[in-house]
Length: 340
Image (cartoon, rainbow, N blue to C red; front, side):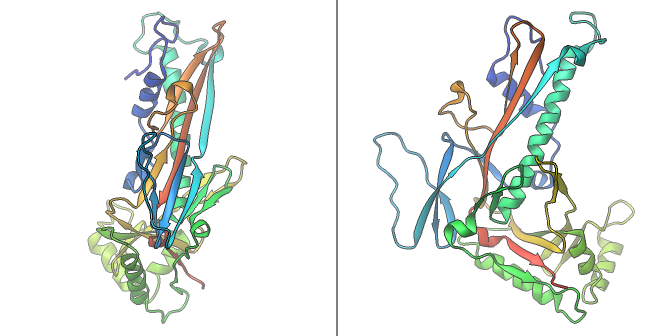
């Protein structure tokens, strides 16, 4: 279905129309996107103030000018202001993109101009989705990185918190893997800090997953699961394995950074365990677009606009997302690793 109009129509395009168009395009959902782990919340400012109290991070609300301020106890609290990362991405439609296609106005089911625009907007949306996945998987571990791989914020360092890490020692045949799993689940439960959860999930590297399912203490359980629970003729049983209260999932993903290098989303022989079904722990805050008409409005997940070159020689396509993902309880995300 065509979602764009002829850009040379007198009506033109508004920011709202283009933004709506890019947000209804089919999304290439990433794993965290499929899970819906990070809830999106728009804010009206380009920075947020986060307060830490007893290991929990809270966003301070904005209030009308002249209204009473929120009040917090000085004891055991610290506050930091964090700028919301600005992620613009542009493209252009030129004559060569549509040259040789059906002329504008010619009888055709699909306008070549609209087809090119849809294709380019879809690709741009996918790049934003991959960038958001990269930012959120790092924020899950308490770190905010940009598309170059540069660490912008480390919530553990900012608020004096320590990350919980469990060494599964999977290279040792006598390791009690069930005990390691119980340690992880209890650590999650101890750090809920008033939150709720439904289960514990773990995204692990292929190396960690292979050692886990091949360990003498888990091998028989995995064989039974593969034979009965996962219906191997229809599913790739290599991908996940529920054991001792944790659903382990192999997460073999990498991204190409802005500088040209690549980075794995889960490091080799590592993983991260976290709760599912929480109400207000994982949130991505979105700031307004860097445009006059968006100032002081509630931020959206993604923005798009277009600008026709005055002489009609090309169309600039401009997109942006302004996202700050926050894990409000950083110690809930348990680092898993195996030292051998």
